Length: 108
Image 1: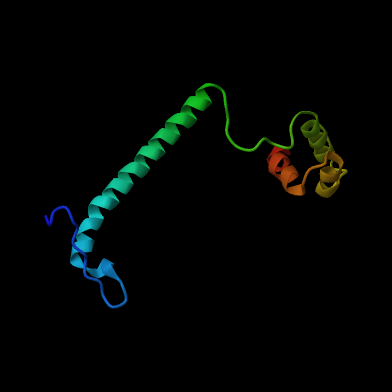
Image 2: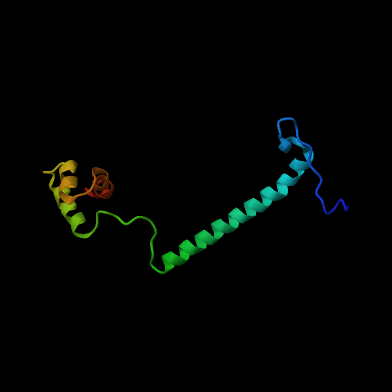
């Protein structure tokens, strides 16, 4: 039989670790370079898609729970200084973290 049609077996250590074999290690750099190139293509396409979406007015991510009327009520309660953040959160129906995220930089 033709030896080029049938791959030769790579000798393995008693534990089966063929990655220590020099012939195996010689195959790794091209595979790693190809994987890195593929990852770069994915990153490039992802960024291009995100930029195209932004150009169409789309924004990614989870929608905010504190918008419109809820945000106005929370701002008024916060600025009045009569309510705790916990009370504002319960009144508006969101978490305290959402109140802090939207309002703490807005007090000045």
